[in-house]
Amino acid sequence: MAAAERGPVSETAQRAPSGATVAPPQTPDAARMSAELAWSAGGAESVDPVSLAAITALMQPGLARDRSERLRDGLDTVLDAVGCARLQAIFQPETGRLALHGHVPDAAAAGPVRAALKARLGESIPIDDRLLVLPRPQCDSLDAVARVGLPQSTEQTTDPRILGREAHVREYSFVEGDRLVLDLEAPDYPAYVYVDYFDAAGRVIHLQPNETIPLRRLAPGAQLQVGAATDGAPALDIRVAPPFGQEIAVAFASSVPLFDAPRPLVEPAMPYLEEMRARVEDARAEDPEFRGEWVYFFITTGSG
Image (tube, rainbow, N blue to C red; front, side, top):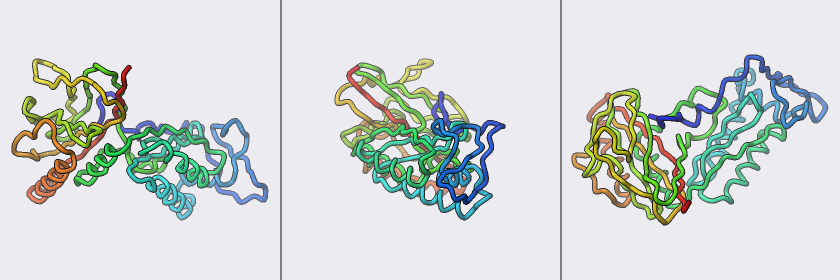
């Protein structure tokens, strides 16, 4: 399941240009060494030994499997060290840079992450910091979403250049008075989709289904526009209003209905997620073919 107009963050990692080459590991006496790459790190003509070893480990992990695994384990540890955060790093061979995606609970948490990554990657791999801030309780709600028991929709598992946990699939920005509309795509199997908005007060707003919008079984890959009235179908008209800030919307997909009746339009987030976790456990126990997944959207609101 993905955003309709933009896939998961992992899609930003592009294939290396056909002419790109990476020098094999070396152990020279000099503190720096030349690397015959398709890019020139920071405009320099050489790459320091730590960076060269990291490049080899990320681009050609089979050449030094133990070293590659140690590096990846170390980078994963750095990315997982911040509480109430989701961080993902993507090495981009066409530029020689590391793109840092995701969010932290406060701006001060980003600096130590950058420093720890730089210590493991060396000085020749610049870090593009694209981190956002998702404060509490919204990030706590996201941690609870991850405990529901459904896998997060992801495409990163086979790409050695992508590290950390999958982050949001799309960013939305709304100003006061805007109608809240989200675009997404159903998964590649028939599914029931639940779309929820988690606000700064620790509540969840059920965008669909709810007492107005019935639960529907969607065809594989069906396009869905949540919050917009299309083809005469009912839709909630939710307008952005204070308080403003950073919040999330989550789309859950399930091959079977998870609830017997519509939820109240607004309810406390944590009890709802606990009940969903129990329903997922029941569904998995009753149906060995059960399938499900989730994705989330990062939403910023402001006064304009």
